Length: 382
Ligand code: TYM
Image (tube, rainbow, N blue to C red; front, side):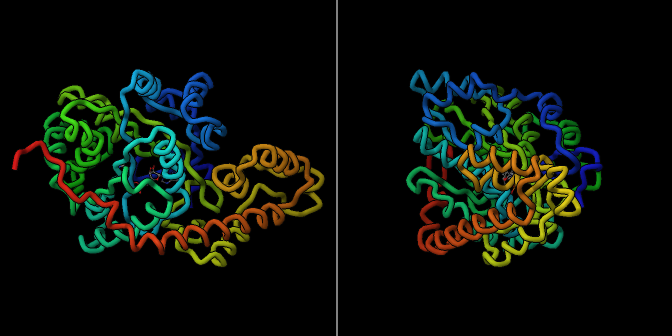
């Protein structure tokens, strides 16, 4: 299990240890999301989204630039994605919920990439059929989040490669193997597919530019683990005649255990969107907390909400009301509330959320096809 004592590691394939976001800003060379920038965003979005008010999205690259272009009338496209390796958990939808908000606020088109190729290359036991069928399964969760069907295109790398390959080739010509080794830690014994894959994840950032026949700005909301892809993509973009894609990065929703981000490899500390609500309730009730060993000590010393995943879940997703959130923190610190009480508050909200999500998910079975890319985007004449 990832623990607070473990060294911090943040890559697209591994996140471990206690995450120091200030340090990541410096290490990755990204910009903090300042209050000034938030005020600029607010002009377009109305009251700031919960994930901005609480700095869950905490850093960016070129967000200021993309807003300046928008102010001048140049619209941007959104791009985000999923590596379908199993069922979707509630950590994954943190950036999706925010992306939906941006889609509405800016009336933006969205490309949503399903990297079934990446998952096939990583998991020795995956067949291509399995990877692709997970794309279609996970797409139901994407649709259930509520993206605009007219303005959203889901892309399966395996099924829709015709639209991406011409871009991936152009990108790949400007990336050396030594860059890929240094940025992604790919080694001599890794398969060669993984070395090419970053060019495939770069490609959707430029799709709208191909369609429009001119550079179109692109904004990528994702958690900070995906950043290595964007570093490489941004280096190449001007060399092939496109804008560098901008990013906005979120923190990680932790698992329900002690430390570490939510990870499907520890299912008991992970709430899947397909978990029956009662199963999720049990997981919440068994969660690690920032509580003291006894109720008496908790009343005397207060709890530690800063290390408590139950508190984090309310903060990230489930308690909209900032005043209630502040009171919960203070009541915990002051020993006026016990862990089982917070767990009950969270469990009720999670159950309600899952029931609603699963209702929308079953409805999505009828509409999901509409969201997939249906016509290839290529620069070639037929
Ligand atoms: P994947 O499937 O690992 O993750 C999907 C999205 O969820 C974010 N994420 C989290 N956010 C908050 N808390 C967590 N615990 C958590 N775990 C994961 C990821 O940052 C991601 O945004 N290679 C990608 C798929 C992809 C992609 C993209 C993602 C292709 N193009 C463009 C973002 C943007 C992947 O395997 O994501």
